[in-house]
Image (cartoon, rainbow, N blue to C red; front, side, top):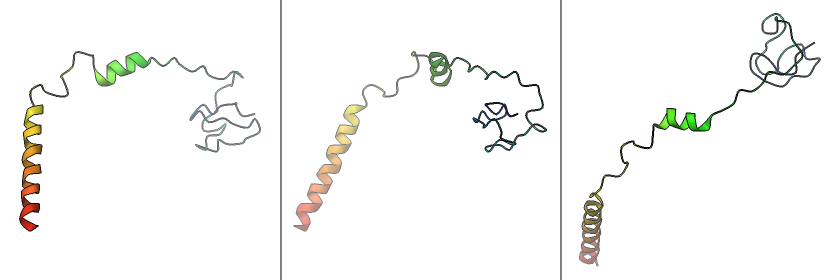
Length: 91
């Protein structure tokens, strides 16, 4: 008798399934241990710990340095000026 959940990949199984349709585990390769009849409990997922581990704390470096916005504003105006000048010369 197959367990309700494959112990190898976690796929739900038909009680009469000879092998797991996802990973191919069977009694000889993956279900050899005695099955207690209970589904394994899912462990709690701590989202806050995940965010801290992956992205660090809130005191990280700023993504946008201060004082750089004026630079890009000037670059945008220069590019716009070059485009307008080129268009007026062609026209």
